[in-house]
Amino acid sequence: MTMQASPQSETGESDAGEPETGLLVEAPDAGEPAAGRPQPAEMPDDAPKAYRLKSRRREAAETVVPPLLLGGALIGFWYYIAYGLLEESRRFLMRPPHQVLEVGFLDSANLSDQLSALWSSTQVALIGLFIAICIGFFLATIMSQAKIVERAVFPFMVTLQAIPILAIVPLIGFWWGYGRTSRVVVCIIISLFPIIVNTLFGLLSAERAMHDLFTLHGANRLTRLRKLMFPAALPAIFAGLRISAGLSVIGAIVGDFFFGRGNAGIGQLLQRYANNLNGEELLAAVILSSALGIVVFWVFGWLQTLIIGKWHDSRQA
Image (cartoon, rainbow, N blue to C red; front, side, top):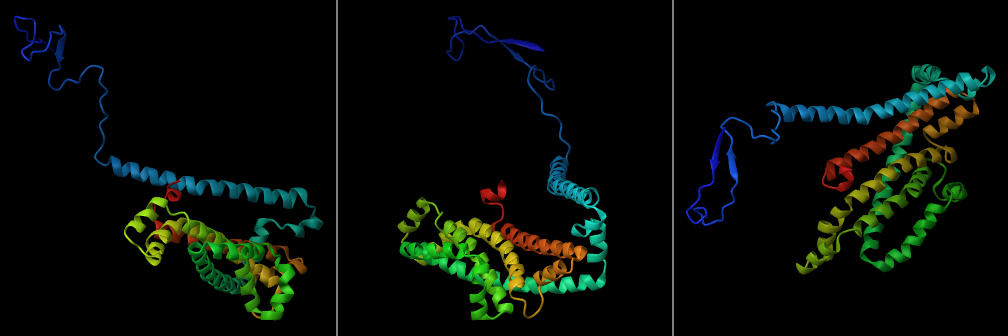
């Protein structure tokens, strides 16, 4: 280690004309780390790849493990109800999981009937959801462009959402019969409101500064709607679609209870199993109905990720 003094002139100033400080500057030798200075740890060449792999594994574990733990707890609670709370004579009210698996899913005849009914309900739910999306997008777009239309239409949309389906069953049956068409109408009524509300909210959520920029460039209504309002509304639109997707499945099942003509849906099987006290088949049909709702919800979530990507804050949270 060498010690170097700052050079001085006869007048007490350095050669650069600065006043003398009287400090000694310690120059570290080559290859020797400076004292008190933290040194970065040596990183392996594949550190970024290893960290990415570790992050993905951790993310997958955080996504999969909590539902598995909760599912295991629910199955344990299910067994506790079946064997701990219910007597043998009343165990038909809540069959244990292994019996539901054996009778409801491993029996080919029961499984075939349930899958056929589930496919019929899926078709009804998808048709009703598609029509609801078309109507909802059209009304929300018109309402976003004309305030008077929003004020005129929105109260009736709220009224339609608040009407109990049971109260208008006779009207629906009188107008569209008691078959598949009426079940589709029920799906439309139940799933329409979230699409309208979320789409309208998204269209009106574009920043004021961006509207001013489009006005400055002389953009017309169609350009403003296509390039500003709809891209800004995509997160809200997909939130409404995911809600309505689950509601359309509920509408298809509810419609089966009231409009049973035509191909039997999963709701008609639920009603039949409940009347016959077939506990295993009933719980299996309930599980399949729930699985249908989860699949439809996940499909729209996947579409949201595919179309929006990760640019929006809701995808980063």
